[in-house]
Amino acid sequence: MNLRSLKSNGFLVSFLLLLLSCVRNSVPDLAIKNPRVRQRIPILINLAEPWDDAEREYSGAAVYDDSVLLMPQYPHRVGNRIPMFPIKPFLVSSPDEVEQTPRAVPFDDDGLANSIEGFEGFEAFAFLGNNVFVTIESNQSGRMMGYLVRGRMILSELSPSIKLDATTLIELPPRANLADMADESIVILPTGRLLTFFEANGANVVRNPSAYLFDITGDTIKRLPDVPIPSIEYRLTDCSPADRSGHFWCINWMYPGDEAKLNPARDAFAERWGIDSSQSDAWRAGNKLVERLVELQFDGATVQATENSPIYLKLRSDGLPRNWESLAFVPEQGFFLATDNYPKTLFAFVRL
Image 1 (cartoon, helix red, strand yellow):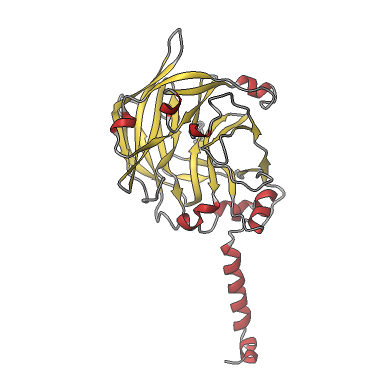
Image 2 (cartoon, one colour; image 1 turned 30 degrees about the vertical axis):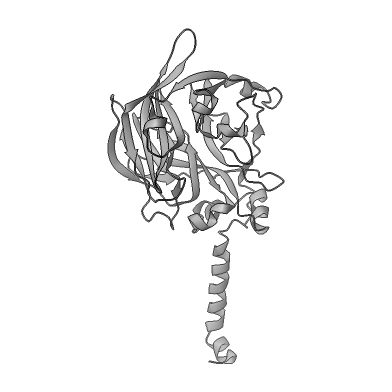
């Protein structure tokens, strides 16, 4: 078929439109700026030693009463303690003005770090009253496995402490066998139930993504039918508790080195809302990096994205990604975030 006939029957036009569509989808609409999309600058908080060391590898955060706690992936590296910060000072002044020294809360894992085969650390944790729930990641000869365990915040006149109960341990089989990935997010629901989310839920990773649902009203953890969730590209690394309407926030981020592993499909959030200027510029420069908070909702049967736009975190000027893995939400105020260990230990507050 010659060029003239192609033009005459419209085939060339259709072919070019299809080609442009494929090129556009290869960079999932992240090159499209939206001046109305929400962008926030993480305000860094100076941590005192030894809490600022990269070996802390913070993997979870949670609000308890009027304080925020961070979960090191390996608490034994800092004497089986976890840091606890009062929230109020961060809300009334700039948190970067003074070095923050937390209270060190004793953490007793009831022997789990030694008894779980291939133990790779504690991940998410969350509170329901004085009950604490923690997820654990393990690598058993190349086969990933996650766990959920219950514990208690023990209050005393000297100091609070956390004690896990190994008898409550329950398996969280991963949705896909991807290295270093397990269930890394916990969502406490107002009905006395709990959701856990696998770290990777993209369309090319998990065909029918879902979250584990548990009844935690009794002394044991009772598994309920799984809950369908939407395909969410990139990684989910931590979530906040749900409010009375079932709304909750999650860290959703993309590390450029994960592109081959996660094989991202179309980014529904970016297609709907666009992206902020810093991440648009990064993608145009070939640095496929996403750092954002997305809001989801559990309606009692399924999890869906809400009508609120994501909150994009303004990227570093040097282009280095920040491995945000810890999230604690203070309603009407903002978010506490912490990194694992890249580019170093970072603790930050993001005003709402």
